[in-house]
Image 1: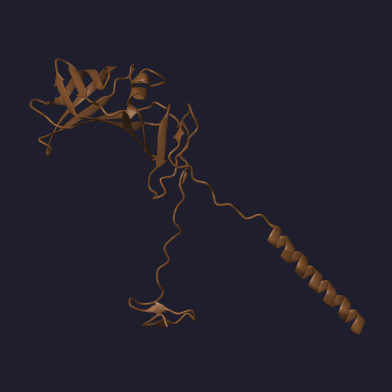
Image 2: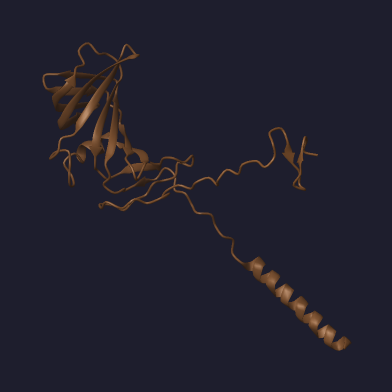
Length: 225
């Protein structure tokens, strides 16, 4: 009887040691890696562009942006919901590229000047034939609404529904991580839920009233002790 018990005990100990060793040798599960601040080639999604400049003039059928910023801000619409930026010169070089490009379908845009540093003066135009000369950017325009007469100060040009795709640094919106919102190049894609960022876990409502603390035993107390 004692001999049988010894064999059983040895078998149990051996099984426990084997299980512990196997668990210790199991490779750790790595958390998903988040690519932050990388340049990507997103799909051709409708995007709002914002170009900033030191000043803007609108006269003689031309809009002139002086000392325009070297990078242009981009905001992708739903369902992608991403933001990023790209080189302004790349926007100009892609003006006539791809389907539904700006050369074939000139975009509407709003030019807004902070005159005197506080009062915004706006005009709505249709943009054509961009021309970049150093830091000066010129468009042929058709005036749809408003004017910039006497407006002096920093300017922002808001361009609607750009569909370029090259060399954009995309960042996910709606999450504090700022993770990259990647996409397949050259082709539209269906909506994807939670791609490109990682949500925070759901917030658990406290079980104790305000001013009380939950002890390690599950009781609500006035203090932690």
